[in-house]
Length: 221
Length: 78
Image 1 (cartoon, helix red, strand yellow):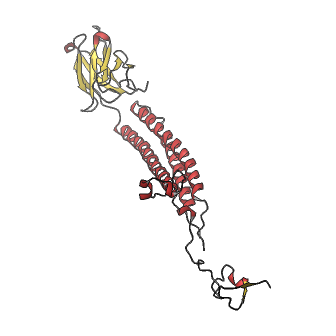
Image 2 (image 1 turned 135 degrees about the horizontal axis):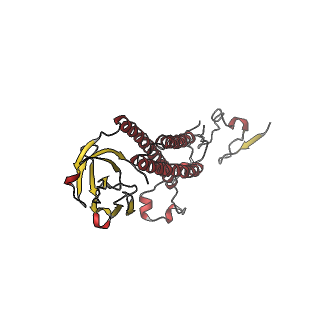
Image 3 (image 1 turned 120 degrees about the vertical axis):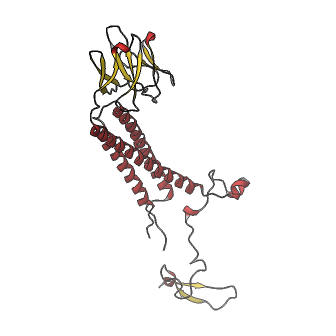
């Protein structure tokens, strides 16, 4: 058996100790426990470290006054940012489902009804008429571009931010004054500016002197 | 008895950087999906709506799985 001998300063009688007593799990059983045996462990992750790595006495006063655990702060900030991004991801997924539900609702409403919107004799060549179709808040514009009765009708809401487009017959365009968007008068397609889609075209039917709106043609290009 | 974690803080910080890169890519993809789907819906194109919603939900599940893994590696083991 290995034995150690300890001598104190007062040269007392040497005492013999069994080193196995001081092994982990048996500390204190024979009064041999070191004074720091039960001192709290210093978790290296809980030690404040300045971001530049220099010792504390080389740090500026403001950093000494507010000793932040920078690695922990760095970790927590990124963890919270990740949580916020997942929340944003959930919001986007909900938005997608909301679009799907809106589409179901739009299908459920069915095709718009056929409705008389104007009399041909009351609309001169180059003349325009604002009407509401298919709903009472859906402003549209009817334009007579040729004497032989050629008519064009579009939604008046710009596809960018829903400003009202203004026809310029002589230039052959429909212009949005808000952000300088332009649409072709004959096709409704975008010529210039930020609008992402053509203007929705209103399908027309002329019966005698009466002009009827028969549907809405949504287009992506 | 000492407290042990599966990863040290430095390791977890590295993990979260990689995780954030994935999450950000997926969120940007979702943003693109949302704007493209909205444009298609407003233009009357219904074919892409539900496939895009499915793809966006898949991205959300991946993001949620990554966040769950983050909580898993933070769990204290004694």
